[in-house]
Amino acid sequence: GSATDPQSVYARHRREKINERLKTLQHLVPNGAKVDIVTMLDEAIHYVQFLQLQVTLLKSDEYWMYA
Image (cartoon, rainbow, N blue to C red):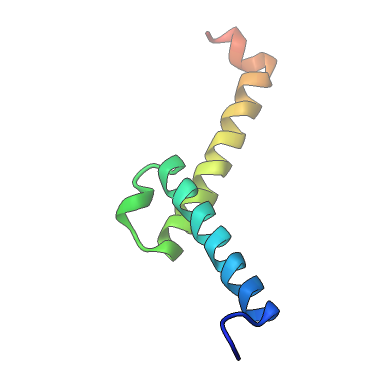
């Protein structure tokens, strides 16, 4: 396959977009830039779950009773 083949161009563009998104995610996740991609994605999942729990707690009336 030639480098100018439309399928190759599309695949290269797709890989570049994925790499850009991974770099952005690395900056958003604590310690994301210090670990391999699989670990960073795992950390991102846990971090988002943690943030979802925080939102749930902040929305709950019980939380404000103890504040």
